[in-house]
Amino acid sequence: MSDVGPGKLIMDKELFSLTIERLAQTLMEEFEPFENVCFVAIQPRGVVLAKRLVQRISIEPGMNPPLLGVLDITFYRDDFRRRDKPLEANYTDMPFLIEGKKVILVDDVLYTGRTTQAALTALNHFGRPSEVTLLVMVNRRFNRHLPIQSTFTGIQVDALDKAYVSVEWEEETGEDKIILFADKQEIKH
Image (tube, rainbow, N blue to C red; front, side, top):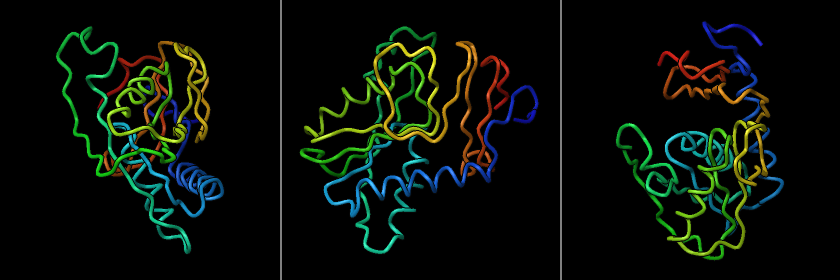
């Protein structure tokens, strides 16, 4: 772990790339050849991860390109009326029904489990899947509010409640990395 301003770098771009590759390989072993399987990315932070995984899997010989949907959960959150300012909704793009499909739900960080709960509720509008698995880049093991666990995890992070884990994507910030901040106030985006 190295210093990055006020935060601690817990995953550099090389390890980040290896982690994405490991997740893709694990998914290919589990779901080959991706028939009746779809990815559903939770807006906004799960979208880049899901796109990268689908892109990586799609170049593998013998694999069917997995379906990819994007799900906004803003108004399914249990805290959307409790915020200081109104939340801004993202878009939902689900060009398929999930009825009977194996759904791989994708997000960047699993923390309290409330985002995943909201996503599971939102998924009901698109059919009844045969199974749902959760894939996250970071599993923050402490301070879970709901009994939700990831099936596929890039990295486990144990941090105090006030700490904040920032997954930064090359497409958005210019570099892939994960930084642990002692407090969310330290972030300077």
